[in-house]
Image (tube, rainbow, N blue to C red):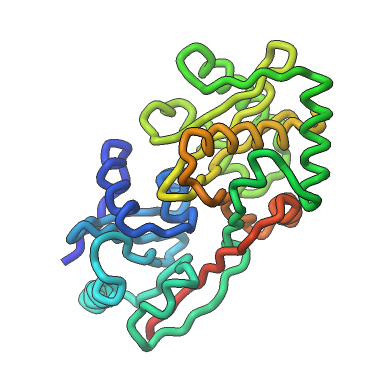
Amino acid sequence: MLHFRDFELETIPMIEACLDLGNYDSCDYSIGGIYMWADYFGYRYCIESETLFMESYRNGRRMFFMPCGAMRTNDAVLLLRKFCFEKSYSLQLSVVPEELLPKLPAGYVAENTPDWNDYLYDIVPLTTYDGHALKNKRNRARKFEMDYKPLFETIDGSNIAEAISFLNSYVSSDKSGQPFRTYENRQTLSVMDRLELYPFHSLVVRVEGRIQGVIVGETRHNVLFVHIEKSEKSLLGINESLFRTFVAERFSENPALRYVNREEDMGDEGLRRSKLSFNPIRILKKYTVTYE
């Protein structure tokens, strides 16, 4: 029998071990994708046979993630179906990567969820913005760097308080009123308060001595996941410059990286336009899978 429990920061190494065995490119199977949204979606987990099982319970609706780890996909889903049968639950799998659909046991209905599709990019062009498709990004970053002579720093004990102060101001200025955005802002601050406990990379940009942008992500297999991107909106080109510098540093440290995952747009048209403007090589489609 599977026994689900709440996520805790102390269990990150155990969760990472399963994620490494599963090797999925979707942001939902990263530490940031799980821990930053655990409270909002009511995530709980169970580890069985070196395989991570996750459930989500929100607004009276229970769903499960694809099992991720050492077990064969077919065997792991059959175990989950047995668990749901014994509990009298219906089995719905959320954010199932498209490439895993052929590995599922038969008897399901799959529905694409486009608001939750991920944007995947070739990492090499993003380290320099070379090429016609990224010309505007290159020009904006260059102008910003020429005008302001920014300084870039990894977040550590010497600047974490200032980075949090910038993010507090950024969050306070967000008047969107969107539930997802409000929760994301709150979780961004929560992560920053305990950043040293996460397996994350980070960078800030200083303009005229003040931190005006923060970016945080993680690497898993050959993918760089970007979880947090916040910068001063009035400074044209700051986002392009910060993002390029962050990606270039990660690629320099780990040349085996092939892709950047900038996660989903959650149906926000502004986010969708922004993510498309960086020229993704692939949209990672995800599905809700229902077993009758």
